[in-house]
Length: 127
Image 1 (tube, helix red, strand yellow):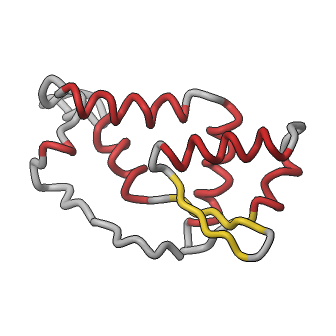
Image 2 (tube, rainbow, N blue to C red):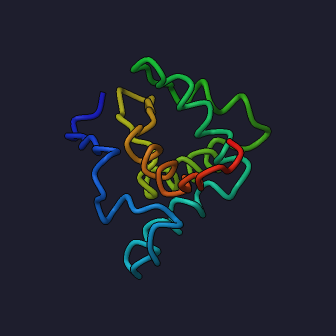
């Protein structure tokens, strides 16, 4: 797994990084960070790749690039480019082992996006 230390966010704490879309206007730096992540998700190939990786990562697993490439009618360099953009957006991480690279999702990053998009339910509003 990743050699990075992951920070678990307290969902009840009103941290500035986790203020939802409706909570307060975005600061410029946070908007840039979020735009990078959402832009990475704005491509159907990258969205599918993230879904495949997150599905494998669900129980702490990872997926080899050799398992991802055959699912697409794209060249290996194109798949690598898409994976690089997902990594640069902080949504996945990887580790090279010999000639293969293994990927896993970063749950805190995905949870952070979900928390940002979550809006508070108004009293009496349908769920």
